[in-house]
Image (tube, rainbow, N blue to C red; front, side, top):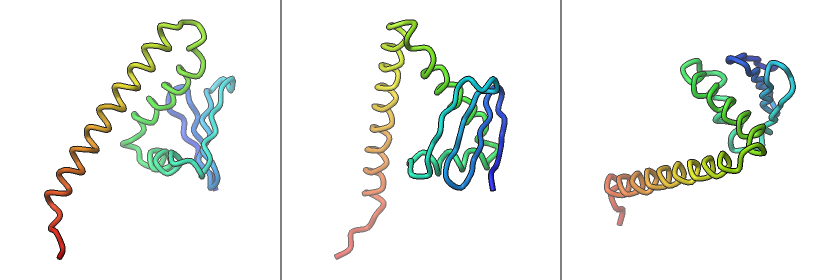
Length: 109
């Protein structure tokens, strides 16, 4: 059984083996296998209306990145820098969470 969802200019199809994201014009497509770590997160987002705004942004970002880097090297550089800063923030949050979890977890002897 598959679930189909349209968010703005993107059609997302979720089935038991993959998620596909197409633009409405059918000139661009991404396939995400169930083997990908992203599959479960995206499946959750498809099935959770509160997540549709974020999922729509994910679709748009993938489209923009896939189709536009060839026209402007500065665009590619800016995106890579933005991604690097995002990864740094994520890593810092994960380290902070690990520290907080360590404090909360009683030591077992």
